[in-house]
Length: 147
Length: 153
Image 1 (cartoon, each protein chain N blue to C red):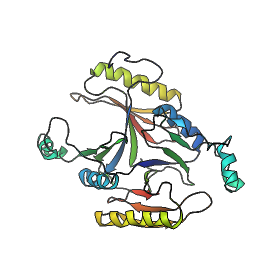
Image 2 (image 1 turned 180 degrees about the vertical axis):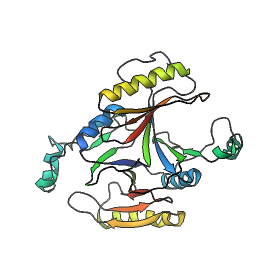
Image 3 (image 1 turned 60 degrees about the vertical axis):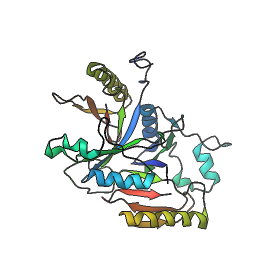
């Protein structure tokens, strides 16, 4: 049996993180259901208390309909340790691309995401190993890699 | 065509995403998730089996990673890497396995419970059932064989 999944990422402030990851993955903010101008309008209609509104968009989807939906779930606790799950974004083109080409692609992507609020943590490169990556953190400190 | 737009546009044109799990035993956790999601774990390119691949590695690197993919090609690859540290807090990223999409009430609960009953013998742990409320449909919280939280929803 095959099942699909959605990825859930705990956070403090969903919409900025949703916008960041939409830009990082080529996703888009999930539009509110038909007939509603905003998610708050929809949630109000289904009876969600006012105190729980005002979070903005908290889900992103792959416009191509392939990749998993991602839900940014508000939680009270902050991040304390390195995440045990993380995302890797591959833009280099794999080992069929020359290492110099991959490096240029990866660095360009790391710079693009840094301008959107991510932080570059480290370059992942070992002498003699055919790999180039950049370790980063998203605007709430979640680790991810570009390679 | 590959290479025709090496850096073209604001975003690289070829982009692949995977979800990486830190683990104690990558193959074991990967095979569990294959069972959950219907993923498959073909050996690395050029090798007939994972064992054959592992024999090419120095002893300390054998079994250090494992990967599985969606046979339909739609879902992201899952990558499992061995790390020295154990899990200490609730994960901030988790998977919701969508077995009950579109179902409500008793029918939904029956599907979630049936899937839970399938996964427990594989080593999953049932944590708790969250019943539907104003905001959310019912969902069943579980943990995989290394304690990573996931939900059936």
